[in-house]
Image: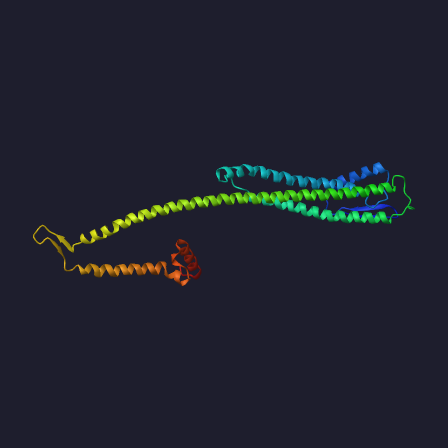
Length: 304
């Protein structure tokens, strides 16, 4: 909205640019009500601003209180989850971070608009103070358009400037409260995930103990199994005759075959699981994670 005041004729032109039609209608109605009370426009270039600011501040109050309601709703919704997390150590529901960030964006936009309004009101009040200093007493005025009327308009402008500043402070408070709520909920969820990680680690440790026990039992049975497998071959014979226990003179064939096959298996295992790790400079003792990384690198280079 722009205004132009003609001092000689005491006429004011108001230009509404890209303004909501309902807002313009309400402002015009308020200005007509002011003219009906005064009988004629006051000899003041900003006489219509109190009517405009009254309706405009109502819109800003609606936006600010909407932020308050949204923030309060999020705080009430998150309170049971926080209490549950403190009591049983787990957050039971999903937190809608996207909604909370949208509310924060809306609050930042309102705060930005109010910050601009504060600067605008400072400029308007300063311009009206210049008008009051330049105003001379010989100017012809009716009784209604006296200096008291101009001073009243100036006080109204200062009041509106203070109201806008207070609304901006309130909006900043709601925004800060929402940011604290986001941070608190994030910390609660992080603590819950940390507890879950500790529980998983404990379960993994228990599984490792079970695997160690199983491996130890298998290790106990491995030597007897190996020995019994050797003695069950046809290289050994246990008869009832006087010769008793006999060993074949071809027993060395067993070692000729077993030793090379074992070495060949070890070589193939080394080639498959360790060669690519050495190529990319990775530690082959890192476990499955290293193997996954090697596979990813191999896919990039076309090796696998």
